[in-house]
Amino acid sequence: MKIEKGYKELLSDIRGELHKIPEIGFKEFKTSKYIENRLRKLSPDRLEQVAETGWIAFFRGTEGKRTLAFRTDMDGLPVEESEKHEMRSQHRGMMHACGHDGHMSILLVFAQFLADNRKTTKDNVVLVFQPAEEGPGGAEVVAGSKVFEDLEIDEIFGLHLFPLVEEGKIALKEGPLMAQSGEIDVIVRGLSSHGAQPQEGIDAIVAAAAFINETQKIVSRFIRPVDPAVITFGKTWGGEARNIVSGEMAIEGTIRTFSEDVYLSIKNRIRDIADGIEKVYGCVIETVFRDMYPPVINDKGLVERFRESYGGEIVDIEPQMLAEDFSYYQKKVPGLFVFLGTKNEDKGFVSPLHSQNFNFDESVLVKGLEAYVSLIE
Image (cartoon, rainbow, N blue to C red; front, side):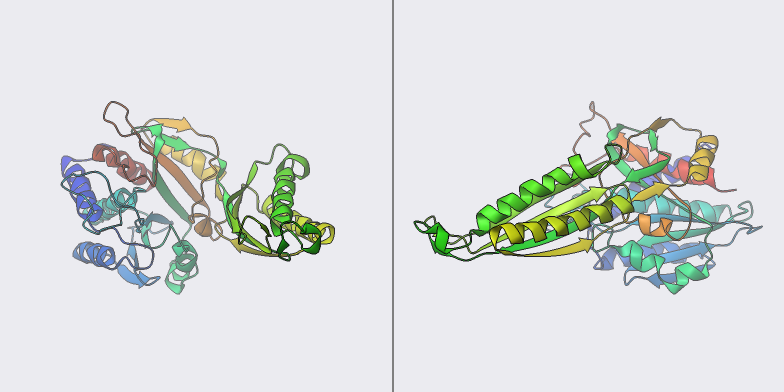
């Protein structure tokens, strides 16, 4: 479907205005007010606030046989923007470095499209403006809300701007697309002693090193090679001085996989390793797991329907170890999540997500709007 020029200009205008006011999760107060003001002018059949700063808008179709939901995230990141352009962030130390300003722009212009085409849109359409995707997981709050349940949604769709895919192309994957993620905090408690008398103490550093080394064998020796998974310990600290056997070490890491069963297996194996290290070294190991987002798994039927309905260029993509709380909606209803490419080397749009230099050509947002419009009747 050809998108009219007025919608294209509106996409750019809204993105620029939202880019100036990035806010972190559940504190998107200016962003929330901006969204509310725009939606109220369109007079949706139902408009309700959700998850503190989020909004859900309902547009009733002429037939209403299906209810389709479309979701955008709202929050920015604690990143100081490096680009000095007209729409630069006005909030010091905060930036839309993950494209959520673009996502919101697409959904707000989609709302305008629905308002302009009330008499010809058959499907019921729900627009979900969700806070706190970057953390601590606004989707779980929205998906569990009464208003979300009451709308009896049949399917849900979402997209993410993606600088690893060429500009304007939609990247699509049936089944697992993004990983389940979890965090692990570990405290290894030993016993301090003089460095010249290590036998009098319990060396927490040596025990921690053994723990890290053993956990790195989990994926290669206890998980099937066809089940991708990664365990990363990115931070350790401890010890008092160079000549003192360390009495305590702290370790922080992450777990990522595409299967909830594999994720659980990894957690159990880590606990077993901790028990074994305790016995061998005489230390005490405390492990705390924080289960973050489930894996994003795209519904086969929705993937096939999108291939048939969308008229733009589609490319296949491999599963990504990134995480996305869109997965909480997919636990409720069938869902489809796609990537919209923004990579353009000639224009310099190559910076990764979460970078202080991240940016994109706003003309690409039209492809996101076209994708959403193609899914409704």
